[in-house]
Length: 203
Image (cartoon, rainbow, N blue to C red; front, side, top):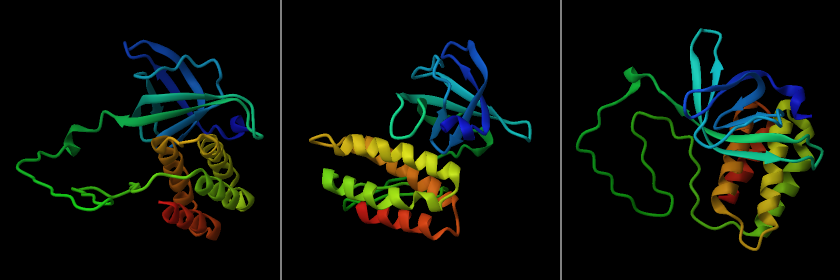
């Protein structure tokens, strides 16, 4: 089913600059790229390029390529954690002599930027994670189809962590951030707003 909404085409470039594959059907979503191309030879340190309609090219560095086999109603697919690379030089800021003092578990600072982060001040319990999944999954049908698929993939990740004696905080956090980004994209949807509220309460 994931292949049904591969709306983007990306190019895989290896770390040494070799173009490994072009015209790869994918879905670019924030800091994650999904593709149903199971044969993709993607590794940490590779790059995925997306051509934009304005002629520019977005460049994403692969930080964690994860393969998921068939399960939970989803086709086998790659869920690739990425970070934007090669920001235009004109946007770089020269920072000199800035000192930041932090206090408290949720302290943060933003300099010439928008805060889209999630802070975690406590460990997740398996019960909290299972409760979150049980509240979100039944209402997914009220979201756009592409949003349903992305969020369901992240719920599977959260379930996997919830079944462990000690869930991996950063893996759960990454899944929650992806769900939050998708929900924020469904502006005006009450279910999406409710999901964002649940994430806030969980953290």
